Every structure is written in C-alpha cells, then in structure tokens.
Image 1: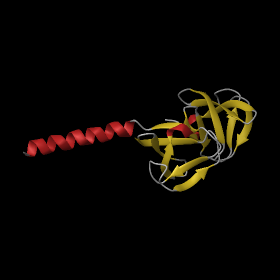
Image 2 (image 1 turned 30 degrees about the vertical axis):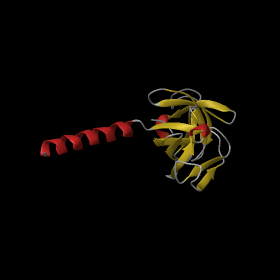
Image 3 (image 1 turned 60 degrees about the horizontal axis):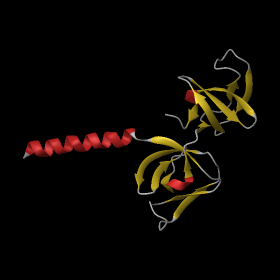
Image 4 (image 1 turned 180 degrees about the vertical axis):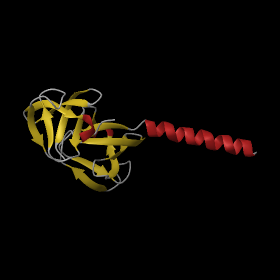
Length: 148
C-alpha cells in the first residue's frame, strides 16, 4: 500500500515539473486586453492592459483561457484570442544602451529607460536584436524581461 502511495506521489511531482517547464512567453495582440480573475468571461475584470505587444508569461491553461503573469507580478486569466506569438520584451534596468552591433565596443545608438517595450527581431546567446521606436540595434539579453 505504501509503495502505491509513494509511486503516486512521484508521478504527481513529475507531472508538476512538466507543467512548470511548459511556461512560455506570449505578447498581447491588442491595445486593450482584459485580465480576469478566473478562466471565463463570467469572472470580473481585475485590470486591463493598454499596450499592444506587452510580454506575458503563460503559466497555466483552462479551455480557451491562459493564466498569465506580467512584469509587475500581476496574475490573472486572458482569452487566447487576445494573445500573440510575436516576440517582445521589457527592459528591466534603467539607462540600457542599444548598440549598433552585438558588442559593447560597437557604436551606442540610444539609451532606453526601465520598462521600455522592445520588439525582438532575433536573439543569440547573450544579445538580442531589437526595435525600439525608430531605432534598431542590439541589447544585452539579461537586461530584458520576456524571454526564456
């Protein structure tokens, strides 16, 4: 009997690890998206987002709703139709430089403040090529929130 309970606990913990590894980032599809308290239109709206392409971490799913966490640790449920696979990230430190090339020795193009939305064009191991307003360049990957 104890073996069955022990094996059940092991299987349960393995299933928990699998769901944790399924966390991934998506972005908001529209300029106005509702964050709800639960996975249905019947639940009240906790807050609404006003920023298209804002990255959110998908933590769970229930039918057509996804439980998300944003860069300010707000959590709630969003309908899948309001999410996009386009890549974007938020700067996590103030006064980050965007460079012409993926090197700190290349020409700096612009300084971005904490919380600035960057559209991701591609990423390497340490650097990401981003677009911020009319500027395109490279920023250190570890200074961005919205990438795994």
